[in-house]
Image 1: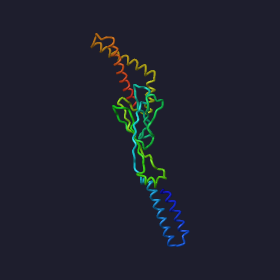
Image 2: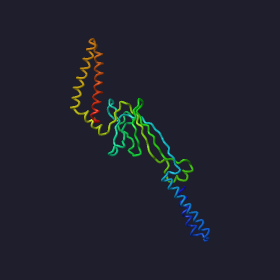
Image 3: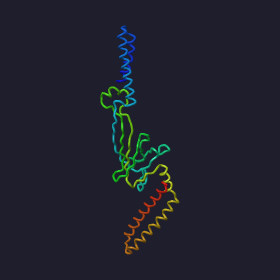
Image 4: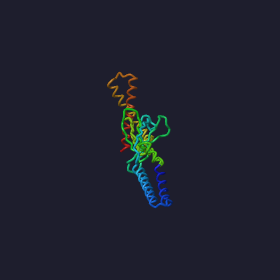
Length: 240
């Protein structure tokens, strides 16, 4: 409506000045219309620059997330740096356990991402801030500018379990390449076998009457322990 008022007062200023023969009346009405033009322009500028008549409204959503890694034994939260200074990151994840495609946070300067560890569900809590008109009156006057529900910023708080590893996209590629290397696999197979044998011998020394089932349990635990240690060493190597 403010735009309509601006146009009408401008037209009326012209009409009053040109078509009214009484100069006092013409000048008075013209001056009044010019003031109307100036006031309308002032409020249009304030609405556009200072967001006059608007306030911030925050919408909060929570989305359950899943690891972007194909390996269930090594859940990952991947990120890609935006720019060279690593001031902004885009985090990559999946929205379901069987999703073929990954999702990611918005690649905007106005997006802030925060990683937090949790013992609860892995999830992203997104708070988006929009500018809305304070009430119907402001919407009536400035609604034609079509700037209602204007996006301002968003904050993503990413809650992930302690067993998740946060890696950059290049680090993840390096990790995948190394794990799939035949030389690495052969090395790990030999080292794992030696570690498990050592643990079994130690357990049998403590308990010479150990049953076959108990020995299998020791093997299972030792294998899992070695894999966890090997992965930690590998991750430290990747991050260094």
